[in-house]
Amino acid sequence: MGLVVDTSVLYASLDTGDRDHERCVALLDDLSEPPVIPSPVLVELDQLLARRNAQNAWFRFCDAVARGAYALFDATPPLVARASEIQRRYSDMPIGYVDAFVFVTCEALGEMTVATLDHRHFSVLRTKRRKALTIVPD
Image 1 (cartoon, rainbow, N blue to C red):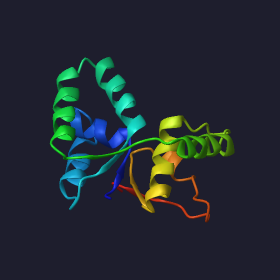
Image 2 (cartoon, rainbow, N blue to C red):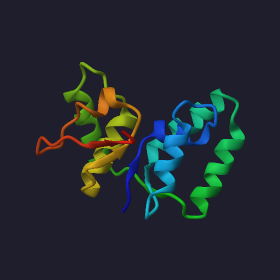
Image 3 (tube, rainbow, N blue to C red):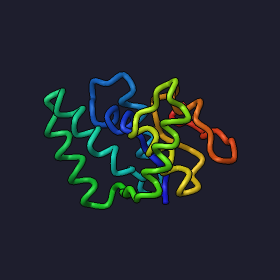
Image 4 (cartoon, rainbow, N blue to C red):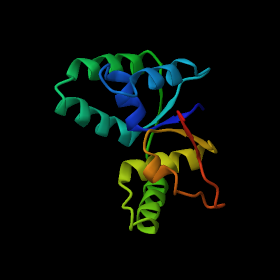
């Protein structure tokens, strides 16, 4: 599977007015295989776009998902439990469920790079082997 993508990168790639739009579009366009979207990211992305009255961007994104431009990664009970474990471990941050699940998706796929603009949270998270993820775009 491909690069795991957080909500922030997807949102910036869809919002032409976002300051990170160009670099997020470039990141996604340069991938050789479809990026992986953890299923909870879909809900968060829909909510962000709806708040900004950008339903058309949501519809275009869903069309791209349907065409296979993105791979979806579903939650399972063990992964939900692992995400909750991450939230507990980093409760002083706090880490939200979506970020925790994005991180757990990386662990489950053995992917050591995550596409996110959220350096605050993702820069401190560590795998079970105490490894940090590489964050892109830089």
